[in-house]
Image 1 (cartoon, one colour):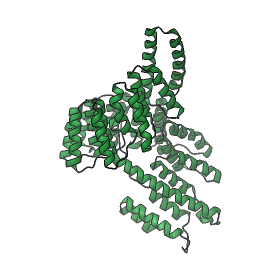
Image 2 (cartoon, one colour):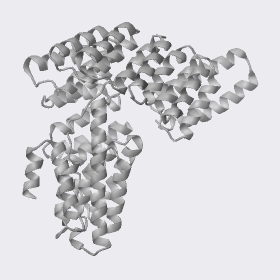
Image 3 (cartoon, one colour):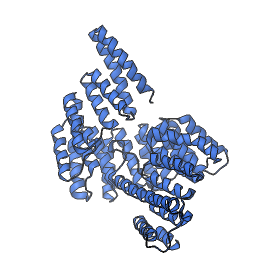
Image 4 (cartoon, rainbow, N blue to C red):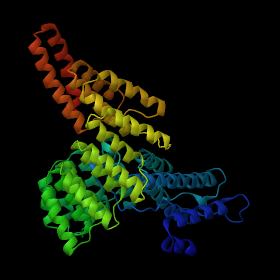
Length: 497
């Protein structure tokens, strides 16, 4: 095991994971003279589950997850599958063959939960927690930290499950340590529970325990999610400056539409440190994008290209802001630069972003042409691709064309998401077809898709405009029918935020 741990320390992660897996396969084969015990298996799982977690960031218009991160996520899922295979083997060896030395321990389960966390598989992580209780395996602070962190990445449902673990911790006599508190703050942020996040931070600070940059990054991020941008910025003023804290507060500046403050901090980092990272560049570009400062975004991207440090997400965010500002010709030129000069191969995200740029500019035919080019390169579309195709007809209130594009998704095995539903609701709203907008929203709810902030804004706007429309038409019966349905829908809607 010493040699294996040394490989994990000194070799690239991909190589270390491969060596660890091959070691397990060899030791666990039927011809092996000695099967690996729980300690050996747990060490192997820990190596396989390890990954670079430096965290990507933002870029709302460029989706927030880059193709590089997509690839990392795929690797993480593969690692999680292998970790679960090892756990399954251990249980069989113990339960079916009576080799108690192979029985999974608290540390084995915790390592598997960490692997599932990296793969964004929070539901499976919670299943492991239930399995631990069933098998009588104890839980410690590390287990709960990994579980809460996994849940906090699972949207509102995952965050609620993470918060629900607080009572389980009490039963197990586990006091929230710094990693648990940090993960809980993230979960509270997802749920928009700013007071709970604030109380958790105060409890840690008043306890006299040491804190770290991760805690404050999570708190700043949570405050941003709760819309408490002033507090996020205030928190930054009283904690140490690191690349991570600076980047986190830049995201707060972006959401607060304070691109000048983000730019000022970025220039300070460049002049005197801490050194900006790729994620920092992403945050600054996101600030420009949110404020529609396309010229500044292009200027920064040009600087990054000159420094040979421009990444795909930087191109994507710049493409996005150009699209939002109707600068489709510049977006087209930037796409060609990326494809033909930079050496970066445009991915699904890049193609989808360019399609959206065309769509926002009403250049629907050009968007369809790029869509076909993407297919010719054997790049499968996703929900964002189809949202981009819908933008043009949606801006014209062409409900029929949007429905046609939506039905086209089935041909590629793409499921509807909140983003495609939002596009269709907006289209129906523009068309003045308010009943259709409500119908689409009801379908979204019936399919168990979580509405987001954009959905809320759209539904509230539809309600107001729809009520005014029927009132102007003086269709008393229609008003009564529509109002009754709208009250029901709005009740469901507002209860979800």
